[in-house]
Image (cartoon, rainbow, N blue to C red; front, side, top):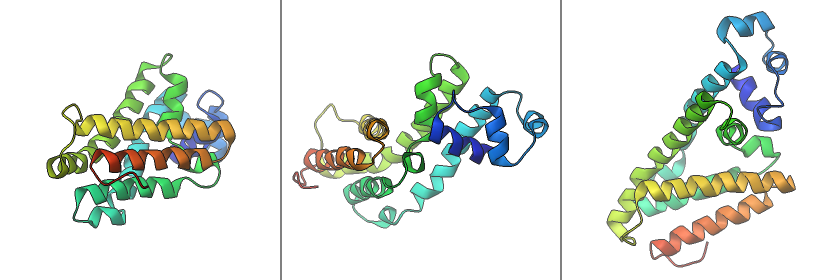
Length: 192
């Protein structure tokens, strides 16, 4: 049911996704759904937690993580994200980003679960950013967590822009600008 929630919400949004649709995609009865989850909101919270666990190995096992230079790892991560921006929008957009845009004002439980998932991404990226700052230097007001949040916000914004055009090209352009910014920030020139 978690995977069914991920695919359905990414395709049509949280509000437009019914328990019946999740059950149909998951191949379970409504009774089975309510045996595991008290409500659609409870499933959404569990699905946000599941999203974090689903994404973690994909990011941790990516080839760029084996690079010695932390800036190369950070740029490799951005390239990895850039390579993911292809196909239908529901295939590359963020489940928790999609859900929190709709539910932040109506469900504090969903908002908090999405916040935790997004923060987990930022916390995972921060050590390589800190190592890059330590090695290359950075302006005084640049922090590892702040830059990780910027990376996350650019990605989330890129997903929104891609949804407006139903085409990943605009998202790829935005992430290319992010890579250029990171290169300039750490003295690697502006070429992406």
